[in-house]
Image 1: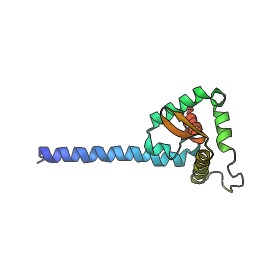
Image 2: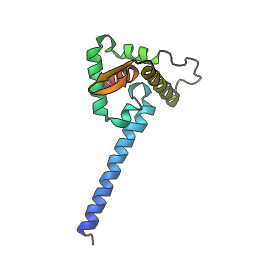
Image 3: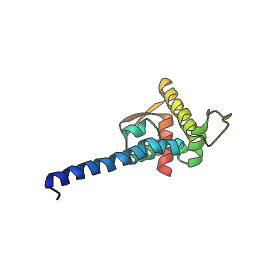
Image 4: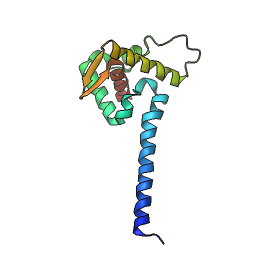
Length: 131
């Protein structure tokens, strides 16, 4: 026989598990599957909807970078072309993250929707917004 207390406990635990799974799926797996379109650090603070809004705002601010081709060109610039396996998505994600860190060091930053982000992260958000 299920009591009210056990029902509420199971409901809260189950809901929390579902929520955690969804958050984990977006924040950690997306960056590995879509390294060009998922800013790793930013996605730990924001959900996908906020990241897309940042991307739309960036494209409005920089219309010359509002196409998939131009965003990919900028994001893939300076990534190691000698990579033996271009399907190494985790490696590509790491290199893009290093590029974002370099943007912060060289003060290539933007404030979009009250978020302070690197230009690389802004481009990743825009690419996600286009997908």
